[in-house]
Length: 498
Image: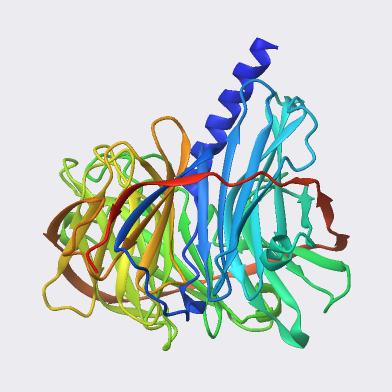
């Protein structure tokens, strides 16, 4: 039993690392954020003392606010998933916990990688890991998708639904859109089980009925690509891609892989990839080569890349990821603002440290005030950076916490605040609230400033693409047993200057 617990801890570490490097929790839902109440204090850190955290996700829109935390119990081998929910205009806050029907942790556990709020529903995706090994000596893994309605969970009348898709080995990011005939479309990116090919799993509701249908979208050309993020825009769905690279050797070595300088963008209607593709047409996606911009043109193989909304009204968006400079001694963050996928007028770069990994990106709704969560070899617990692309000062504010690990962030439905979910050194769940506009006021965060550099814009090249579509089938959601713990919380830091 002791060896089993050790193996479970090792498995969890691998899955959490996968989530951090390829998948972690996605762009915030700021495109729906309309609530303008003002919080009394500009900076508050709250400890949820009866909940543990090894990874977490926080999301908000104009209807709901949800925090998810997961933690593996080393004694039972059970991975607990706790969701804390509340609604706009109400002070009611409740929690519910599920193990996704795992009985004792010896057969499988589930790890969530993304969560998304759309209208009144919370959707999530992740990976189901079986603790036994298959014929190849590897642990069997499948993608998982689920949902619940927060207001129903608050009223104790709701259920948590989920389904396991064994055609996929993992599902890392998702986007939700309203398709025709008032049907909900869930688009989740991940990999196929049999080939490890990057795929989009599309799930379409039946317009109110219990049965859904699904299919898998893959690329015939280009090949050897990674789907790294997907996001719902006001007019479309956007897909962010990169090539798999042969190695992580820097520029100047004989076997340097030029894929480290490339990324791609694709665009579909709200009905999804399959519905937007016509095999009779010549189909292109946007292809970008960073060239040798400012010597900061190298992203690591399968480096996390993240979408963000930007100004929201005009369907603008941003792309962000970490890069290394050509000398190998410095690293930082690149941010590309797009008005459409075929060109960007300019982009920005600012140094952080080496081995930069982006976690999440967001903006204050309908503004170009951005906030990015990343980590690197110096800021191993995470760092939030914020700047206003419309400002002439080019100032970047860094927010750090010391020993608190930061894993996810969102703009809340309360004013110009962001909430960051994470943990203390004792693995207790914490939520860190910060007014992102009034950063000159006292804060619970440590603050420093720097400036970003502006780099020239580029036009996209046309990259011929051909999609293929697999396994159209139907399914019914299953239910997960939930438990309802009490919430015990207390503030550990408050700064209230208003």
